[in-house]
Image (cartoon, rainbow, N blue to C red; front, side, top):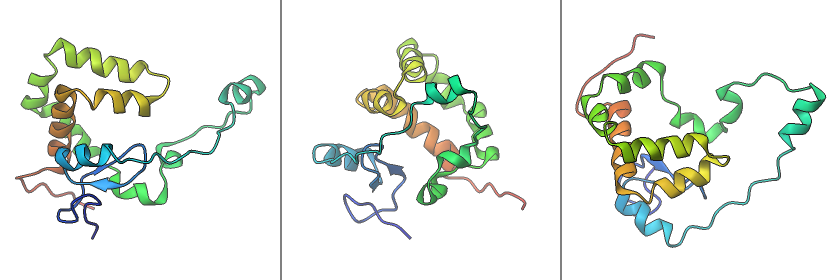
Length: 145
């Protein structure tokens, strides 16, 4: 079982998008962000040249996940619970949050946009609420295999 890379006390719930360390809370994230050393990503081939050549192959979410990211994959049943959350519905009534979500969705670099949005307490509250729903804190949901 993993432990938080910042406090070394709790089970980590989050992963830093810049350096991939795992942390357990907003407090640990705030401590970490001051010393974060982003991992340089290898230059990816230009996707426009692939499309222009017509050689683009279909991809899936699994293609985007690295082996250590598999633990972060959320089952569809849990994702569907997001639509049933009254707390999330209340948060989404806020026009500022909706603008933040649209800016992340429209951004060329989703990672940079999320990092910027995470500076907004409202966005952090929304992200925390999403995690509470999908991690199913305080309730016993089971899935039949």
